Image (cartoon, rainbow, N blue to C red; front, top):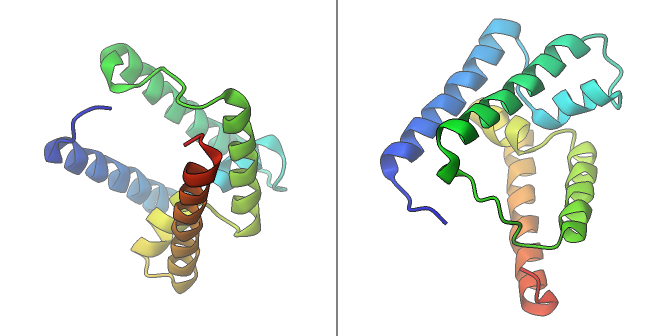
Length: 143
């Protein structure tokens, strides 16, 4: 775990907000990652895979560049077994499809636009996450 620094947190928040604003103003689209991924892999019937793939490649490229420039930023050890991570990923994917969005679309973009639907969705995401982590941590011995 790395130490929290307010400067890094503020800079990160500004960069995220700037990226979301550029996406919304430049294309009129919300930067919801679950929708972007669904469009690339074909779960969403869209004819615009190009920009979606470019968005994902860009996100991965920035992560790779940052890994080279500041390798101590990333924790390379897996804190949980990979089977548990895989099951968790599938459940998160199911949840994002069920709620028509994820924390990037609802939590960052929707709340910023004062969308009631997004506020309720984000409160539900985090509430269920806290309950799940508490139950698994207490009884599962994994978390």
